[in-house]
Length: 204
Image (cartoon, rainbow, N blue to C red; front, side):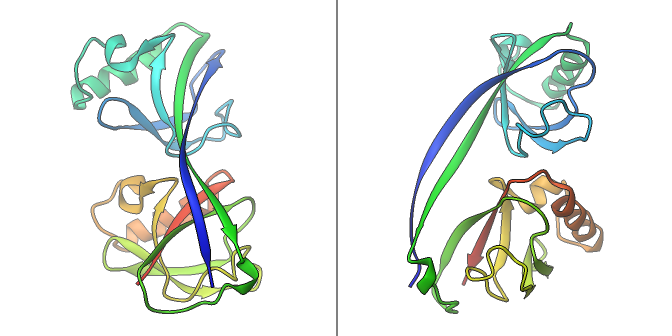
């Protein structure tokens, strides 16, 4: 049988961007912003992850830096302009919430259908090794698990992919439903996203 335990951890770190664009795309959260895309030109593309939270600029909390109380659309626009125009080098603080999974008895794991289960897997490098198809207008479902999949012993046909790096699928791709265009965009994101990448699955 499959057994696991996990604990939530929070990591905070600061990065100094010496010059030019940051090389990331961001989206607003409650009182900060999260990384939605990491571009090739990002100087820290091997350090940052999709879903990392930007919390401060040059030692000042984001909301204090733009003199507002909440990250509404106008505040977000102000923040984007501030990030573009702030003199370099600029010191930016990020926060990352980790899920530390400790797998046990994996050699006895069986692909059992039935019973609610939610878990997360880390894909360290290369292709995911799965074929997916849209499911229920907001998720994707595993259609095939290839022999080269690094987690082939833990995944089953019919498992539902629900989130990437703690961000729900539709939120990370910026669509309201998993239509054909959204699905195509998601596939490209999964192929291009920096590794390691953390993906959440659900089995009903």
